[in-house]
Image 1 (cartoon, rainbow, N blue to C red):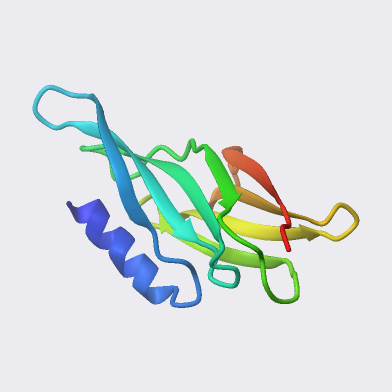
Image 2 (image 1 turned 90 degrees about the vertical axis):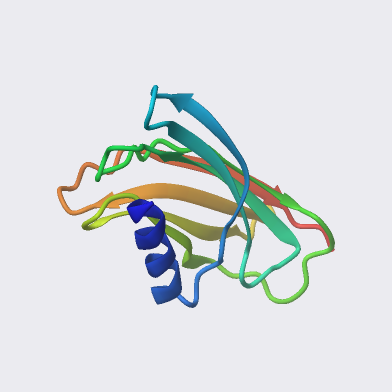
Length: 139
């Protein structure tokens, strides 16, 4: 519960980032306090025709959540506007202090593809968790 409040506060503080909706939740372990994994969906704030799905672990009794993630994005219609790269289109707090799951968008102009990279940012520099997906641009 506290982690969801921290997540909500973090999302409110980052008004320029996308807002996620939990579309599925599965219990993964625990007898009384259940660990879960959520599938969250968010639209790119600049290109709402792109829907991204990311899994977010939710550890019941852990202040510093797992940051392993998987991600995929899909175009749900023609993409309008000038295509650009942008950092931090989605962010989710993954610990009580200084640990964030962040998603950036990279425009590959040569191949006309939007690439989305999700990764963990931590103060101690151990940022090994990441996921990547690519969306061909439909016009």
